[in-house]
Length: 591
Image (cartoon, rainbow, N blue to C red; front, side, top):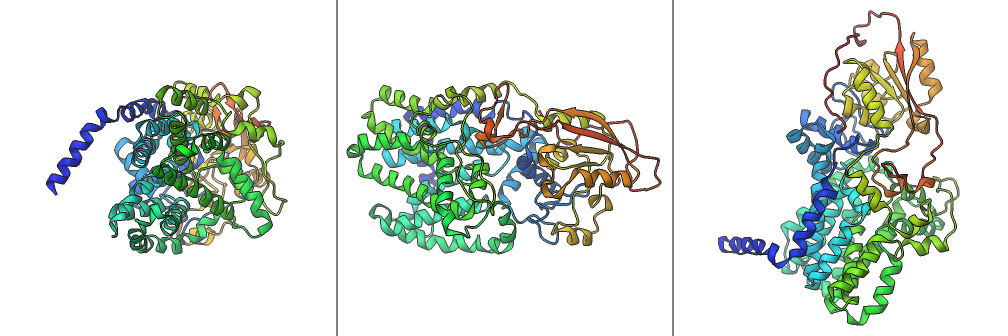
């Protein structure tokens, strides 16, 4: 055992000299992954992870009630009757909690472990391609192309499960060969279980794909026995969670009920996947060099294609066109490293192993849309964004506003600017205002971005559990204070016009309730409505100076976000916040 460990250690020490491209990519990745990582507030989904992670630090479990504010922007559908989060897997929350415990409640600390997972994905992708092709050029090209993907970098810099999905999906494929030993492999099992507890969709697709290949293809049959011995262990460690969490999963999925809609859903899937898979370019490269591919390279490309096919079947079953249009690849982003892997292998083979021609072809893929979406934009007509059923279903391709953005990947320059500058959006401005003007204990009512406001200000939020919510009775039974269920004692009202009626919040009803409780609404601040801030999806990302590269995906004409102070006569209610002028440092601040 000791000699085997020493041999592995010696192998690792030789990596920088035997694989200089890997070392170069690791160094080049540091600034894109970690530069300005703490800039701006966490956006809603990120802050959901961070707020529950902070509760884990305090109580050990992801509970929706932390003694100050109730957290769950899905009307409590992800919660048990004990107000415990179960509708979203726990692994990302506990990983974020470890970082917050070590480095404090900041945007940087919340995002750090996921950026590290992004770095790990690059390293594992290099190892995966090298393992299958024995080509340093192909491995370097694959990792380099992934590093040059702005969509990959956006996912990796989010406090959410996205980077973990990519890391563990890549690691699972890499560990698949270990199953050739014909026995249960602890590493394969551990990766599969952890991937499931990050998100079940990539875990299910990965296991189905690898299991299917082990049954039908000669190259993968060597892993058949090990896979089917390991699978029951994985199921034992995952199936119980499905029973607990099934109800909450429906929040982000819409099962296919009408078979006629399947082709439309597949079309939308292809549109979204074109961010990760340059279909036209891969087809041209494959036609050019298919006869030069070795047997191992063919098997590896088949593996990549099998993953794409599996996602193309499963994703349209659980998501409708509107969800895919809005979510992009967040649940299927394992296709980013696999798409880069297939591209790197084909480029290296097309260039006959010569570095300069390979780099020239890779530059075309990395800096232009010519091998990717350019053809799709040319042959498809613009369509409005899809609607949720029961509206008629159609697919819509995201389109940039300018012709130059259709040819060149201008998002590279926009992202580079983001690494050294920041343009505060609506969330950041509201957080800054409340930090400057709110007193300790002031209660807030808002109709959007509850989690970012709470994470970055620490101020309690009123009117969080509406009577129409499925969790209402359980929250009442848990003895939560009255302000959780009504806006009556709020000191601040923040209203965002784009989210009118979102989760049941309506301006007229909230304002009328506040006035009926003796409140006087005094407008104190307006902020330009930027819609999103720090979104993970390239199509909805607002970059400094540039703004939205895909503005048609976002309705930009909205009234400004408005903040009201709620004045009222002195109250004897012991539960009401007391007026003081001291403003303590909040528990989290946008950096």
